[in-house]
Length: 235
Image (cartoon, rainbow, N blue to C red; front, top):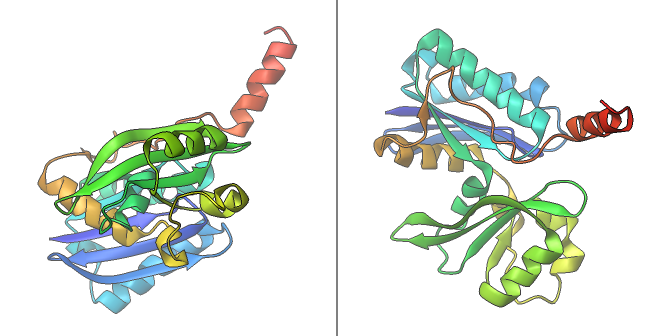
C-alpha cells in the first residue's frame, strides 16, 4: 500500500511517502509560511526521488488541524483535488496527534501545544501504550497559564512539544516538564502518514474529497473582528 501524506498546518510544510510500511521519503521545510509556493515543487521532487507517480497512490493522508487557517487550506485543497480526480480515499489526522507521534516512544504524558493567538494554545494530552497513542484529553484550546496549572496538578514530568514551546519558552522554564530536541517539535508529514496508515487499516477517519474538512476549533481573527464590527453596528 502506498500512502502519500501532507502537512501544512504550522510553520513547517512537508510531504511524505510510505510504501508497504516503509517510509521511502520525506521533504520538509521549516521556514517562512509560503506553503502555497513550496508544496507542489516538494511533491514533484518526492515523486521523482521516490520513483512513483500519483497513479500509484492508494491512500492520501492530510493534517486537518488545528493550526494556521491559511496553511490548513493549502494542503486540504491539494489533497481534495487529487482525491477527486483519482478517486483516492483520504485519511485525516489532527495536528496535536501528529506532534505527539514524534514522541511515541516515551512513557511520559505527551502534551503538544500550538499557538492559538493571544495567550491561548491548542493542546491535546496523550499516552503511548503498546506502540499506539491513547487520547487522555482530546484536542482543545486553553490559556497557557491554565494549561501549566493543569500539568502541575495532574501531569507532572510530562513532555511538552510543538511550536508553542518557542512562544512560551519563558513560562516553561523551571517547570517539572521535558521539552524535546528541535526536530521533535516540528509537525511532520511522516507522522501524519504513519498515523494515517494505522487509521486506514482500522477504518477510522477515512473520507472522500467531499466530506473531509479542516479542524479549526476556534474562529479566525478575521471572523472575530467581523462579528465585533457587526455588534458595534447593532446588526
